[in-house]
Amino acid sequence: MNDISYNSYSDAAILRDIGEFIKVKRVDQNLTQDEVSDRAAISRSTLSLAERGENIALINLLKILRVLNALYVFDQFKVQTQISPLQLAKDEAKRRKRASKNNSQTNKDEPGW
Image (cartoon, rainbow, N blue to C red; front, side, top):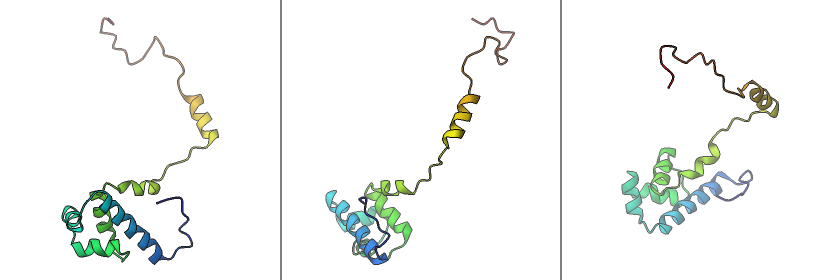
């Protein structure tokens, strides 16, 4: 979905947009409702409900989007930790800058070639 702010949308309007998204993706891939519902292991009526913007179970939405190769819409849900510039600078200062000849992990029994 685009950079639209859904804060002022009603739940019904958001469901309609999701349904339209599903239908457009399905038609773009030249798939019938029967084909998508069979691949998603859901009933055709459930898919039809979703396309009309009706309320369906979240698991069924996931199944539909997986079949349509559209799970990328959930990328916005991924939590990415933010590191402060101060913490980044501290971590950089702690990181080793050079290799050492006297590496404690070198096995003294090996000839070193």
